[in-house]
Image (tube, rainbow, N blue to C red; front, side, top):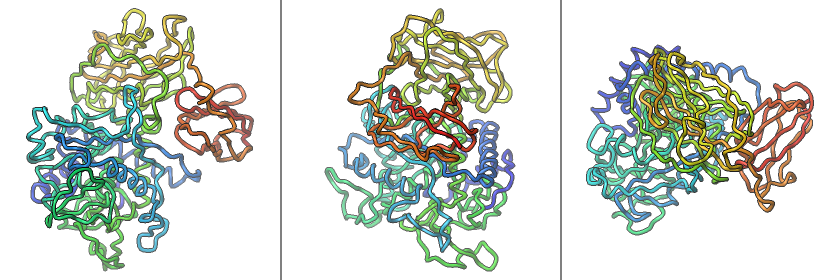
Length: 640
């Protein structure tokens, strides 16, 4: 649908209240709009401001891309964790679905978003071969937890013994009906939502199991910058997550360990094509329903305002929803267009067609997803949760951060130190703690050296100043000493407003730390009342706490694991545009740095096998490639 300049403040209210009324009339396959309506009620002004920022950024990004002649962008890897919530069932028994079913869903997500595989590759949408371009993203199950311990990316959670165990067993999670509230259910079962995409697999939504009850809600997701806290991610019913389109519905529930379970019985609704996950991840990456504003299928959308009656995509015509069917392609099947028009939208993942009908996304949807990755979900561009654990991680905390939930819009927006830039653009309500010691790259520091550090504050706040304190746990004892481990404190009255930076210098000590040991660096923010400083190292009232890793004198891996320069090649060399990186080693490339002949860093990139050097002036440069945290390979190249 065409995108018009966004006028959100009043219109969003109308849309979300309208959506909530519509959803109360009929069960929806996806309740993202309704859940975002509830989220908005927590702080309407802040919600509208931040959604407007996202859409404004998306418009600017789309305009820039139309003018761009750059080569293909680098691939952004999204570390993914799948939380399976169950009541003690054996693995492979609903709702504790098998590893095979989970991995089939992840593989299908990649096929769907990258337009690859036997089902999606070459799909044309009624003869338009350029309509379904691959997206530059990849979903990979996490290999390291927030604290540095290894993981498969599949986290199974038995709620037996929890106070809500019976309610969950009977009704699952609640969107607006019976069941456990997501803020309660996910409080213990989520990972840092800046650096991991959380997927929660549940037994039921609002008391309905789609695999036995027929019609009901299959899932929902959170849009970027909607401040959902620990609920940021997507929810899928267990029997709507996984890809096995040849699944034959049995009469009774499969028992014991089985690879797939998409329901049973004559009233089941087979969702074995993973369309729910593809659809909800679309929402998570800022895609809207293609039929946005159709009033439950009763009116043609006005196609005027993004989020109200438009999905913001010019290449998707206004239309009404397609409810769980796959009509025949027709050049005049869209009754919302004068004299009829193509019904190609039936194949779009963001419609309500049936799983077998879905074959792709549009190019404008691709642009919106890329804008989300460059904007509100930019932390994924540097995240390393998909990389196996490496090195010695910081000591466990002696005291868990004590957080006071608020909604004034304060928070840490961006942290810059020694060439590393850590984004928190989709940050959350005040008092949210982000443990990023293993999910973001460690910053290398040198002893007795002066550094400049910058911190951007005020995620959504425009009215209040914000304080920032920074600590480094040099002796790695899990406690922050205010005497010799605090490297910065903002004085009362010196705080900064939304989007402004607090910049300072500090000098690292000569001794008192262990080499090759990752140390915890804490950034803590709070409201500036013009008098007091931040009084605690582990508690904040109206801000955020974020932990990162720094390391002194990292030691390269042992020789049997060290990357051999011969395992890495770059071409063409010389080059005037794109530099390709070929890595035949078995290690993951995590960081890319380019330095000029004077040793000045001119580029920093992540997780890619291509680097654009078009913007560099002609001359000799050095490409430094980092594998894991410590393995480094340097290559010389010439920019023509």
